[in-house]
Length: 264
Image (cartoon, rainbow, N blue to C red; front, side):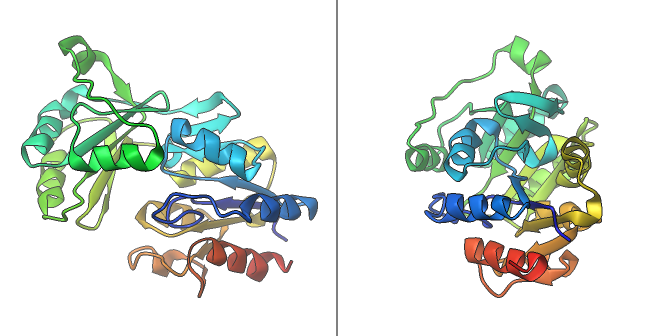
């Protein structure tokens, strides 16, 4: 019996337009009426997620920044961060390669440079970014929730950055999304570890949890011991790790997975 559903956000509930489906709030409310809790495990920051959580009517703690953060309303129940200082040369080299770098500090995003991708993201979200270069003091002391390195041109530069990251001693680890992006988090932070903490808070056993996702940062979540489903647009890397692969993509896939496992 499934008592808790934990879903990814990007590529699972929302698509490229980043719009929450109009039916999502009613669907989640109906699920809760059947005694099944619903919450989120996303790579996004809580600053980005606040309006989405409200729009979906989610009232339980949720996981943000790839498992580095667990939020309960506006309060962080858990936050794992890593120092940016050891990574400075690599991150500055990213700009030389024409890559975009987005930092998340205490749930809020910040960038040093307004690339075309950053400008487009700001327009899409209705909240333009401003360039905020780090001071020497900030480079020395700042700790990040997450760093996103993005190459929308898919030039192959992320593979060079990956080699540089592997040569640096730091308290961060990364997930690479094919030739498009790298995401860095504190080395013990991932969705699977955060789910273990979350289910303790919600007092639901692992075997009564269904997780739903679509991409490489969901692989550890799929392997966590919960029931797992991938929506139809799942990455080829993540596909083999899911117990069930939906025919439908995005939110239609979420509904299919819940129908399959929850029988409602």
